[in-house]
Length: 272
Image (cartoon, rainbow, N blue to C red):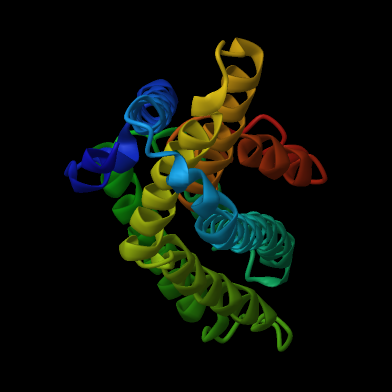
């Protein structure tokens, strides 16, 4: 399970291998703890059971707190990314309307550049699972954004431009700020040591639970399955929220949100 963080392209792995590796790792530690506890009982070293409440309690409490705080922070960053995308779509739609204030000679060019930008952004979201293709699409998006900015600056500086035409520059400037924010949000994650420590505590917690149930004669498979599935899924959700498009929790609905915003502009309804 820890090898996932040292795999060069682990962030592009599918959800299933990540989740299965967590379940297997935790089950292995649970069985190891159960085996060790039964071995202690077989050798009449039952004194270890007296330590269960003293040692296990604080460890499991720290694990629960770390799990809760990490999940909460991951969820907050996920919502911030979605908010950034919605703001970007609104600003692009606003800039498209503001093209009407520009000289009529440059309006077709500016509208086409805005459409190209929208296509490039949608293409970025569609290619997030492929790191190389995504980077090419992102570079293309930045290139179109620069071209759009220079075209708008030239148009607003012409003699035929209206006095209020410069408002489009404010929108494009906000768009540039959002681009910078998006880069920061994409790179802003908890230190790898925190994620590794969380996974390590998951294994330790599984071992301790296995040790505690070693006194029972029979396994309760429903309880074991629920315990492993629940904790493994929470750990997986944290990773998936931190790195969208790794697995099940993807911002694929972004494309739908952008298109819904664009529906206010007839010319942008069916853009793809």
